[in-house]
Image: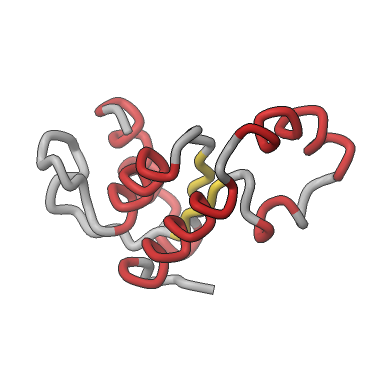
Length: 109
């Protein structure tokens, strides 16, 4: 997650409260999604950005996870995500995101 997006997440969390925030990711690889998820839950693991040492504990999901997919219109989802979903390693992404939430998320569902 780039420094600008880290600052946006931090500012929005301060404004609205962590309990009111959900971060939605769309990274193509599980490792990249996991790194971004860790950043908004446990803090920037590279210690380079605004979230270095800041443990927000936010809820975080990837667009291919059922928790998100089941909540949006199927036609819109298919139009916007369907093609990518076919080429992504969905199981690996879901496992990575679940692991991050279980380890770091204060507001785990």
